[in-house]
Length: 164
Image (cartoon, rainbow, N blue to C red; front, side):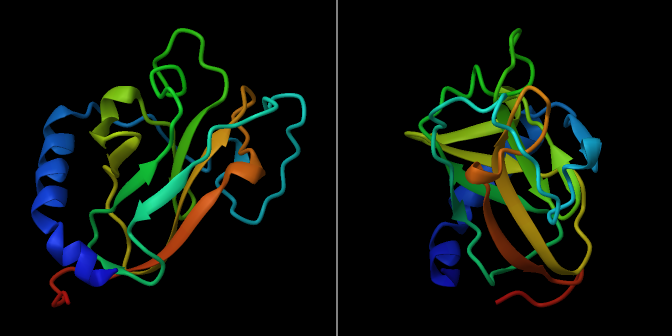
C-alpha cells in the first residue's frame, strides 16, 4: 500500500490542493450527539433504509503512516448530492470521522476522483499516534448506522518526522 501512495503522490497532492482551495469550512461537530464514540452501540431500525449504498475506504490503508493533515479516499455508488449536508432534504447522510471528531461534509467538500471515488481532506490537524478513520452512513437522527461503518487505523507521524 505504501508503494501505491508513492506512485499516486502527485494525484493525491493535486487533489489535496484542490480540496483546500475549493472546500468551505467543514460542518465539524466534536463528538456530535455522542456518536463520535467508536465504542458506542446505536440502534437505527427506524431511520435506516432497507438497502444502503456500500462504502469502501481506498486510501489510506490499515497501518499506513500519514502526516498530520489527514485525507481519506473512499468509494460509493451513492448519489452524494442527496446524501451530504447542504441538500434540502437530507435523510441518510455521510459521516467521515477521525478519532472522536465527526464531520458531515457537504458535496462541495468532496473531490470527485472518477467513477464513484471521492477525496475528503480533514480541515483539522491530527495529533501524532494511532488514529482510526471511519466513513459511514447516519440516519436522520444523526446516529451512525453501524452496518455501514468502514474503518482503517493509521499512524500520524509527529510533525517534521521523516516519511517513508
